[in-house]
Length: 282
Ligand SMILES: [Zn+2]
Image 1 (tube, protein in one colour):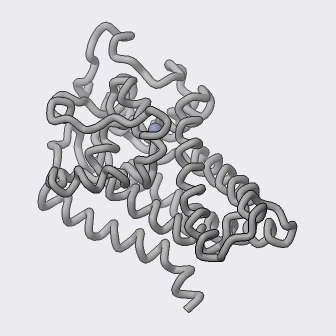
Image 2: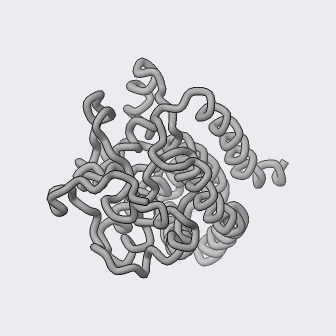
């Protein structure tokens, strides 16, 4: 049974990948602007590098750190003795809050933005974008998660459940799918949907700096960074960054050096450029 629980994040993740790959082919929400093959080669290249770390090393290390915190008697959740089930639920919520804070830092700190902009330079967004992160960003995030687990005293079960839930919601929220409004509207009151998260991938900076949440929309609503989807926004929104839009920029080798390339280090504003450089340049 314990082995099965440990496999939960991997089963949930790969099951969702298969379902979304089929759903995006059958009912794509947006027409792609760049060649799917080229984007997928890059995103799946980053995906393979990330899988070894994220799917295996991170959950195992986080559980070990959690046990270390328990042995040391360290952690916010240990300040008040609560039933185990409450600790698990609070642990899951606190990890999602930590993800929100970390994502805000990724945008606000210039050095972190250099890493995180690899995720944002995808000119189309689909479920593979969820796994498009520079290996250095993956390492920084993993370090942040270990620190959060130790300081918060999150129980191992909460870590496993959160990683499984967050990876599934991230895949779905990046998917190129248009869910029925009657379904999306009530769900997004609490959970990040594709319509909510695609706004975060806009090349327009007020939109880029909104909807940071991974699982819950609650943190964005509480912190004033929530932007509700609108039909007009969906029609006119251009995804990606205003730079790194060329065909060459989409290649895996180019994406890997993006953090080191000289360009603006803050999320862009279209007004800054005076022109909408959105066409894919050969
Ligand atoms: Zn972001």
